[in-house]
Image (cartoon, rainbow, N blue to C red; front, side, top):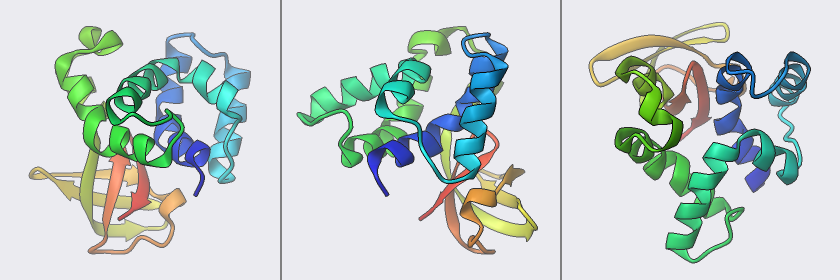
Length: 156
């Protein structure tokens, strides 16, 4: 998987928040949604513009790693290791979000405990919740997957 698609898989769930904040319009949201569910990614330029806050933080991680921001290893490190730390620090717009919303925004490694069509029941930190699992359609009970907002993102 290329870095654009990997970044987009983790970033798209935030598009609804951007729409709610009027940082993107409905037309842009629908285009992103269509690409997301078709396993396609927008250009780097579009991704950097739409998800500018995430990309600003990725640039910080890239600088620490002495690598290009679009390096796949940088993007993986950001989402799997650093993303939640930025949230916990209240960096950027996270300073204005309540704790419940911050917790939903975090990326978690979870266990699939049930699957009904495209809905996965997942367990982590003594919490069981349902997430959309259609981009990890091969996930099955017992698998470890990552989740971000209401979406299962990748099978580990």
